[in-house]
Amino acid sequence: MATEEIYFKHHELLLPKETHSQESLTFLARDFSFKDDDAIAVTYPKSGTTWMQEILPLVLSEGDLTPIQTIPNWDRVPWLEENRLKEVVHQLSSPRALVTHFPFQLMPQSFFSSKAKVIYVMRNPKDVIVSSYYFHQMAAFLEDPGTWEEFIDKFLEGRVMFGKWTDHVKSWKHTDLGDRIMHITYEQMIQDLPAALRLIANFLGKKLSEEVIKKIADHCSFKSMKVNIMSNFSLVPKMYMDADKSQFLRKGIVGDWKKHFSSEQLAHFSSTIYKELEGEHFTLPWNLSDTAEVADVHT
Ligand code: PPS
Image (tube, rainbow, N blue to C red):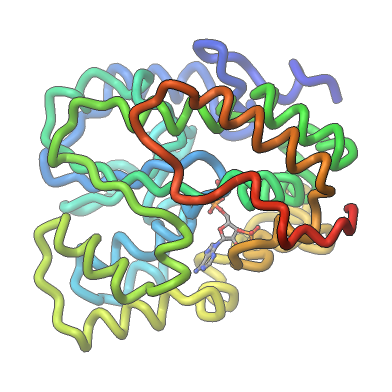
C-alpha cells in the first residue's frame, strides 16, 4: 500500500489512519480537558510507552493490580491523539494516566493552562529503530519497513509515524514546564526499575513503601508483562498485529542494535543524529558512535 493510504499528515507528521483521524485530533483539541492531577507519559514510539501504561496506574493507585489485570493497556492509559480516547475518557478515574507520542508544540491548549505532569521517557535511538523495524513488520497499519538499510534512511529522514526522533526529543527538552516535567530513560528503567519507580512516584507526589515498590516492579517486569494478556497486545486480532512475524513485547533489552548495525551504518546513523543535535544545550546519555561492540552481523 502507498504511504498516503496508510498515513495522513498532521502538521507534517505522519499518523496511521487506522488509529488516528481528524475527528480524534479535533476531539483532543476541542473537547478534551486536562486536569491538574493528570500524569502523562510522553514517548517517541518504541521508547517505553506500554511499560508506562503498566507503571502509571500502579504508582497512582499505590499498587492496586485491578486495572492492569482487567483493562487492556490502550483503554487503561489511552493515547491522547488516538480514536479510542473519546470512547474511554469518561471511564477514567482521577488521577488519570495518559500517554502521547505528540511533540511538545502539538499539545492541545488545555494542556498548557493545566498543571498536568509529564514524564518524558527517552530510549537510545539505536534500539528505538531496531524495535520500530520489527514493529513495522508485524503491524498491518504501518508501512512495510523495506530492508533494514532502507529503514535506516526512512527513520533518519522522519518518513515514519511521528517524524524524526531528534525533533521529538528536542521539542520536549525545550519546554517551559519547569517542575511539571521529569525526564527518564528506558535504560535507567532497565538498569534499576525500583529506583526508577521511586523517582516516578516521588515526582507524582506518591509516597510508596518499599513493599509496594517491589510489588510494582515485579508486575512491570518484561517477564510479567509478556504474559499479561491485558498488556501484551495478544487481544489485538492477527490482521492488525501478527505476533508470528514479531512479538510486540519482543526482547525488552538494551543493546539489541549491536546485532543489526554494520560499522558503516552506525557511523552514518550516529553522525546524522549528532548533526541534528548540534548547538543544543543538552547532551545524550549514550555515546551513539561507539562501534566497539558492533558485531557486523547484518539483518
Ligand atoms: S509503542 O508502539 O510506541 O507503544 O511501543 P513502546 O511500548 O513505546 O515500545 C515497545 C518496546 O518497549 C519494550 N517494553 C519493555 N522493555 C522492558 N521491560 C518492559 N516491562 C517492557 N515493556 C515494553 C518492548 O519490548 C519494545 O521493545 P523491543 O526492543 O522491541 O523489545
